[in-house]
Image: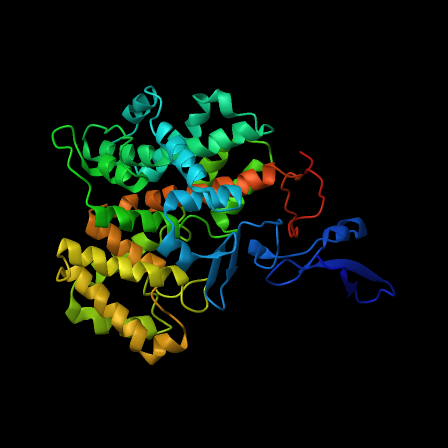
Length: 426
C-alpha cells in the first residue's frame, strides 16, 4: 500500500483535511475517509457503490475488461482445469491444493454431507408450496442448534469445520426442499459420488430407482456451481460480512446471505430469464419483444443480457455457452420451442448493432437458466442452486474477516427527518 494523500477542503474553510490513499495489488486506489468522523463529517454513498468496505485478497473483478479472478486465477482457467471442490479449497485457503490436500478436502466434504435426522422433522412444518428459499433460510439458520461443537468463531479449527459442514450440507438441504415440494422421499447422499453427482442423485433419484447420474449433466452442474462460487463484495456477501461482524455464528451468517440472495434484484436473474422466455411463448413473437426492448418507454426488458458489473462480456458466460450447447445436444432438446426462442435471442444480441453498441451480451444467468431448465430443475429452485454455488465464497469472506482484526459494521446516514420537537400538550 502507498502513502499517497488526498486533501479535502470545504467551502469557507481555510484548512484542508488529509485523507490517506491506499493502493491494492490491482484495481482503483481507495481514499480512507475514516478520519472524517473526528471532524464531524460523514461520507454519503447510497448503495456503497464507491465505498470499499474491507480489505480482501479473495476475488477481483474488472467489469470494464470482463475479468474475474479467484486468488489471482482467471475464472476461465478454473472452469477448464479445476472443479467446484478444488475451487472451494482455493477460495478458503488461498492456494490450490496439493493432490493429498485435495483428497483430504473431498473426503471431509463427503463425511459431512448428511444432516442430523431431527432436521427431517423441520420440513413437516412447511407447506408443500412453500418457496424453497424460505425453507433454506430457516433450515440453514437452524444448523447452529445441532452443531454446537463448531461455534467458537475464535478457534481456527471450528471455523474450518463449520466451513466444511456448510459446503457439504447445502446440496443435501436444497435437494430436500425439492423433494418436499414434489412429495417424494428424501434421498440420502452417497459417498461414492462426486459433489455434483450427489446433488443430482438426491434431486432426481428415488428409493424405487437409484439410477446412474448422467456425467454430462453432472459436469454442467459442477461448472454452474464453480462459476457462481464467489463474486467479490456483492449484496449477499456484504450481508454475510455485516452479520459476521457482530460475532454471529457462521450458520446464522450464511442464512443471512441466503436471505439477501433471495431478492429478485440479486439471485433471481436466471429465473427471470425463464419467465421472459415463457412470456414470449413463440418464435414468431421475438421481433415484437425485441422492438419492445429497444423502446425506452416500454417497461419490458430482455432478461439475461448485459450485467451491472461487467460492462463488457461476462467471462463466465463464455464458459457457460459451451456447456449449454453440450447439455442441449446430449438431451436432444435443441428443437424445444423454449430453447429455440433462447437461441434466436442469443443470435440477435450478438449481431444486432443496438445490443452490440450497448454491450448487452448474454450473461451467465441467460445460459445457466437454460441449462437448469433442460436438466429438469424447476425455476423455483434456481436461486437455491445459486446459494449452493455461492456458499464457499460467503464462508471464505466470513473466515477472512473473522481471522483478522475487524470492527462491527455500523453505516452512517444523512438524516432528513424532523429536528427535535416537543410532544404536544393535552
